[in-house]
Image 1 (cartoon, rainbow, N blue to C red):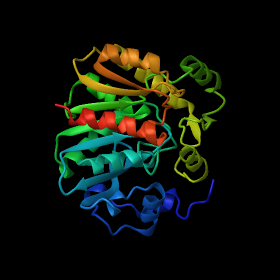
Image 2: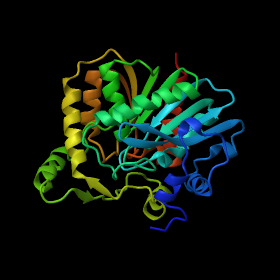
Image 3: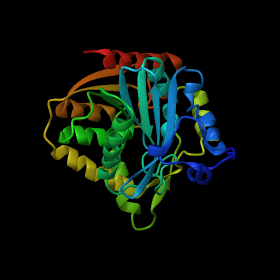
Amino acid sequence: MITPTYGYEQIRSDMVGLAESTDGGNAESVDYYFDLFDLDPEKDIPGVEHFFGSFDSGEFNIAAHIYRPAEYKATVVLVHGYLNHTGQLTHLIRFLLENGYAVCAYDMPGHGLSSGEGAWMDDFEKYAKVLDDFKGLVAERCQGPYHVIGFSHGSCGIIQRELEGKDVFFDKVVLTSPLVHPVQWKKAQATYRLYWFFRKDVPRVLSRNSSDKSFLEFNREKDFLHVQRVPLIWVRGLEKWNAKIDALEPRDREILVIQGDKDKTVDWKYNLKLLSEKFTAEQIIIANAKHEMFNESPEIKKQVFREIGSYLESN
């Protein structure tokens, strides 16, 4: 791993509150972060304002981005996957901006530049609460209609809130490579119970979850915000969340699910079955796509983005 010019602590100390943030005039450390992860697309997309800062949600201080074009047809909220951060979504952010959408995204607790012990979570309700709080800030800065795209673990809070049906905020919902069960879920549960009294986490194994070699190399060599260990308490949190989802009644809610057929991160056949039982779910299978569909080969990314764009444009 290459030592970054500015690290997590320095960038966090230079962040401002999202409510007070303005377009431009960031600290050098923040501009370094933007450049490293290509999170400043307004440099070559005219008319886009970029607001970056943090907000409080429960015990956490959450890092977030709002990209607001001068004119746009809707606002899309993005939620990244487990052990990742908003920097993994840069291709999707650029696609949406180029196609006339405002884009809002945040780092989940314990991820990216948000506070919290690395990827630690005991109760997935806290993930859903962050999404609730962010929706309020999005509504203050951007106009609707509002849509949401969840990737992998980022789908969990969305699935829960949509099934609960308490706060109808999003017009359209897209779940990509959604997590319900990971692969080898029973083995993960057994590992959690075996090691619980001896250790609090296990090393992360970087898998070939994309066919884009440059993406995999960047993760391995340059992405200093990638979480390197998996807390065992997260497995327990996922167990409790699954039990909660199983108990919730199905909802007459249309969603779009996009899944790659070469995904070896989530148990996608089980997950698609459950989601089809809980929602009116249109399912699109992308041939030869691995888990990281927003960071796949150009051909696969183009197909995924085409499906998302078509769905968001539909009546």
